[in-house]
Amino acid sequence: MNQHLDPYDADRPLRLACACGQHASAAEHDAVAAETDAVSTLRARSEESEFEERSRNFIEATLIKALFPQDAVRRSFLKAVGRRTAQAAIASALPVGALASLQAMAQERAPLEKRDLKIGFIPITCATPLIVAHALGFYQREGLNVEVIRTAGWALIRDKMLNKEYDATHFLSPMPLAISLGLGSTAVPMRVATIQNTNGQAITLSRRHRDRRDPRQWKGFRFAVPFEFSIHNFLLRYYVAEAGLDPDTDIQIRVVPPPEMVANLRAGNLDGFLGPDPFNQRAVFEEAGFIHLLTKELWDGHPCCAFGTSAEFIQQNPNTFAALFRAVLTAAAMAREARNRELIARVISPQAYLNQPEVVVSQVLTGRFADGLGRVRNVPNRIDFDPIPWHSMAIWMLTQMKRWGYIRGDVNYRQIAERVFLLTDARRHMAALGQRPPARDPSFTLMGRRFDPDRADAYLNSFPIRRH
Image 1 (cartoon, rainbow, N blue to C red):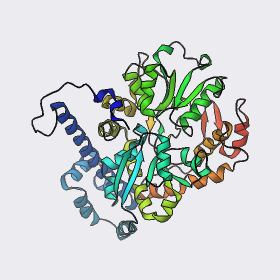
Image 2: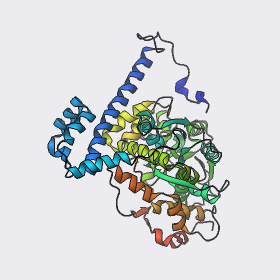
Image 3: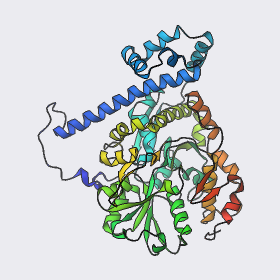
Image 4: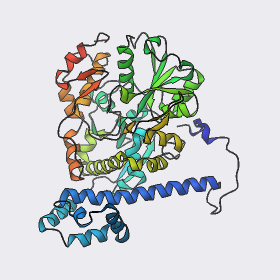
């Protein structure tokens, strides 16, 4: 990727080197120190959380909390003596059955088939769990040496997975379905281990359209989405079609890499985009656009990105895949906690990851943000990191692929969803980490239409604007 696309990388005034002599300026020294402090704090929280989660999972009646019922006392104890010493001390009070469970948990970690791994990611907030797992050492704790690689666009992500240059990757959640079906590429079976994020997208319009908020007025508009097989494309099409516009004839939809969306909006090449954050917020920050709506207003809890790999990699490296699964699930659990969001923004904003102003990323993760229309909004679940790859989500994506002509003929929605989205594996690994997924696939509604995954074709045929 061209590192000079970001205007905040260029034309900075020269300053004297910092006191330690390792940085170009005092400001850079302070930024590195702040990032280091954030990583240290998050690691400490992770160790405390991990200890309590395993206690809940393996120790009867949450013995750790029974021994230290007050949060402040419990935290002080863990901080003072360290996690391992605390475990040894508490172990003396455990029943034999609990000790056996802990020992079994340690022994079930089978030898890794492959330790050195390459994982691709697009520099957007959707990649937060994959990045956090790297920054906080969760991969290392699983015995893995992982290189996370910033990648320029989704077509390149797909190609590098097909060419086996990446072992696993940050996907748009419809991509593994499309690749498995041979849509737009050679058919290669792919698998979704976790959803990376839910919500976290928006429709952003150019400032010149502040008085054209009604989508019925958008005939002739030029929009960008990050990829054809993306939730962004499907939600934009859904939204304008509900307003009576045909997305194939009444508007233009172009594929534009997310890092290039704001520049194209500012230059007048686009009227708007339905894209990932932080670029919606970046458009506001640069006064190039305003947030028309958050996609959670269309479908609250919708999936966006996913973590996945090929079926072949899983078959050849089952223990390595399980270790990756655990690392990413642990990171997702940390990212879901509101108290961690500002620290995570500090960790993922630097050049090695998102290369964005921290204030922009923080507004996205905390949900307190300027919308470009003169308002400061507070939407705590603007983005979330619920990792469960529900089959109903995959089935909905498949209905939209068929609706717009990407898939022809009969589709066995349930079979494809169950093959590609590894729901059973996710539940099993979450349970082992002390995380509790809901027992049932949730139902959901988009713009007033309830989706029933068991009546997918009836749902599809209810739309007056469609290609099939």
